[in-house]
Length: 379
Image (cartoon, rainbow, N blue to C red):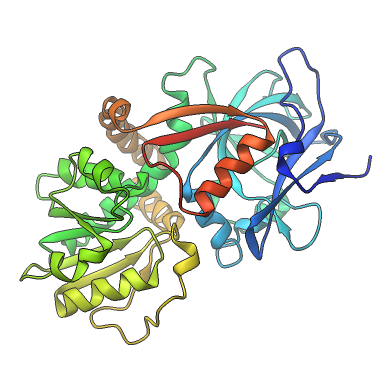
């Protein structure tokens, strides 16, 4: 069957029910040169070949982190994970639960559930290579992509905090890696860490970890006036500064480190100008303000040049230093400390269908999402 393209995402396919065998396959695609242009492409799900498995994507978390995947799709190869139906379009990856529908792989059984990197789709075909607590996707086109994204973990259908894991576990992993990087760098000698987009989940994960560190520096959260009340309500930051207060809010004698989740060049320039030589390191992590990335020239900023922080590189570094089992153990301990706090910080909405997905995606792309709410979506 040839792909059926619905330019309005609101006309997408129904999410298959438990009584369905295999329903229509729906893929949410975005224009690579305009993240605000979306569509649903419908096809028949492919039959898994030898060594392949067909998984029904139960639900996935959607956050500003996924917008960063789209913004950095070419630079960091995120577009290469899942092929689109047509050149010029892309399939943005998400973290999701997938249930095996059928498999031609020994050790993979229908009904098993796995957590990992999936497209915003109703189905996906993977090539599982069993190992550890799950499998790695051994598809040829993924062989040169970061290994951390190719790993899928077997999960219990009754697992506690399943939705929280979809939303926050990938982001908290990044938070953990950044906090570890700062700690092993002796905080770059800084008295305080300035966290951009302080209302974002990655930022407040870092703030939580720094607050738990015995020798952790103070934290300063940068946010918009609109998100100031929420950011202060987290009770994680020693001080909250809005973007228009940077010049005054970052004045003084403290040595600073800047961790930037926004990618907003205007904000970065303001931070560098306020801190000058007191700024000891600038870590560029995300692109939540992706449309402001080129708004100012950062080539001649005072202080250190921004250094891109790529989480998979630090996963591999820590895997070599302490091994993946120990890294997973440490992350699990930190996660268990975080989970009891989440009820007061985040309300999770469960949404269904392409129209809901399109609305949520566009709100994130336009920077209009409520930081106190998070979406778990089934297509």
